[in-house]
Image (cartoon, rainbow, N blue to C red; front, side):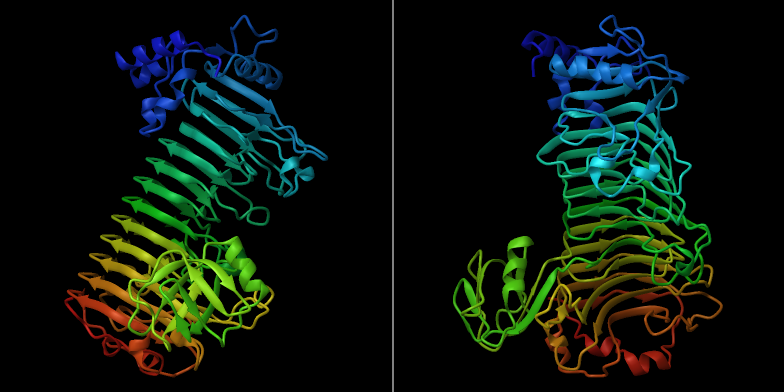
Length: 602
C-alpha cells in the first residue's frame, strides 16, 4: 500500500481513542471503524479508512456522481475507484442518494463494476445510499464468468462494502449476476457489513476462494422466477475463515449454499424461505435452508430458520440444515484388508484403477476401518498404487488393522460440525446429515412442524459415469452426537422423529458402512396429540412414523447380516416421547428399533 506510515498511525490513534458511534459513522467526515466487523483481521483494513473520496464533492473527480436516481453514475464511480486505487487504496464514500450503475452482461466481455484490492465502498446508511444495478443485456449472460455484469470483487483483497444498499430488479427471466467474485484465487479480508440487498431474478451473492470473509448485520431480500433461477440467495464456496453473523435473509426457492468451506461460523441469523406453496413438481427443486456439503470445522449456532407457505407434500426437499453427496463423485470403495503395515493397507481384491488414483489426487480421501480390532480409526490417504493394490496413509495407525477387516474409502461430506441452539419452524424436512460425518454434534435444537433430525449412512449405487470401475457407495458416521434436541409435531402435517438412519440397499456389500461411537441422548419428541400413532402415507422413500429410533434399516433388501458390523458403541439413553407411539406394520417389515443397538454407558 502507498498510504504513508504517518497517515496509518493517525488513523489507528483516532480509532483507538474512540471510534465514532454507529450513527455518526455514516457521516462523510468521520472515519469508518473496521472493528464493527468483530474479526481478528479487522485491523488489516485500518490503513485504508483515512483516505476517503466523496463521489459527489471530491475535487479529484472530473465528473462527479449525482446520486439523483436518474443520472448514470457509472463513470464517476469507476473514476473514484481508480483514483483511490492508484494512491494505495481507500474508501469510496456515497452520500445519501440513489446511484445508477449501468453494468451490462456481454459477449465477448461483460462490463461489471470492478472493485480492486484495497477499496471499500461505503454509504451513509443502507437505506440512505443505494447502488442500483442495471443490466440491459441479461440475454447475453451465460455461465461463462467473463460475460457477467454486476459488481465484481474478483481478485479483491482488503475490500468490501459497508453502510449501503444494493438493488437490482431484473425484469428478464434470465438470471444475471449482482455481487460476486467467481473465479477468484488467493483473496483475503473481504467483508459485507450493514448492507441491504434487494435482488430480483439475480444469481446468488457469490464469493469463493477467500481467506477471511464476513457477512454481518446485513439484510438480504432475494426473489426469483422459479423458471429462471433456483440458486438461492448466497453461494459461498471454497472459503476459509468465513462468518455469517446477525443477518436477516429472505428468499424464495434455492438454498443458502456453504460448500467446501473451512472454519465456518453461522450465528444469530434469521433465515426466512418463502416456498410460495409450490410442491417439487411445480418447481421448488433443491430448495431449503443451509447446505454444508463438504465443509469442515463448522458451527451453526442460534439461528432462526422458518419456511412460509410450505406445501405439505414437499417431502423430498426443503431441508433446513443438511449435507449430502450431491452430484460430486466423493466416495470411492469398500474393501477387505489382505495385508497392512503401520502406514499402509492392501486389498488384492479391490477394483482400484485409473479413476480411483485420479480421484485421490483431486479430492481429500480418507480410509476408515469399519470392522476388526482397529475399528473406528481413519486416516488421510496420501497415495494409492493400483498395481500392488496398496494405499498409503498420512499418519501411522494407532492399532494396525488386521487382515480380514473391512474398510471404506470416502471423502467426509461433513467434518467437525456443531449444529446447536437453532430454532426451525415449518420446514418440510429438518436437520438431515445424509451421507455420514466425522465429529458431528447436533444439540439443543428446537424443531416445530419440521419433521425430523436424521444422521444417515447408506449403501447405494454410484453414478457409473463417474465410477466406471463398478463400485458401490458406503457412508460412515463416526464420533458424533445427537443430544438435547426437541422435535414437535403441533399441526399434524408432518411426523416428528429423531433417527439414526442406516439404509441398506445391497444384500452383500452394505457392511462397508459404519455408524460408530455415537451419543444419542436426552432428546424429546412431541408427537401429534390427537393421534400419536398416526402413520403418514408418504411412500417408502420417506419415514412415515413418529417416534425415536436409535437406528433404522430399510430398503428392498431384508438382510440383517450381523448388525454389530454396522453399529459400534451407540450410547442411547434419556430419550423420551411425550405421548405413546405404536410402531406400525411398515416398521415391522422394514426396520428395527431398539433391538439393533446395545446401549452402553462407556
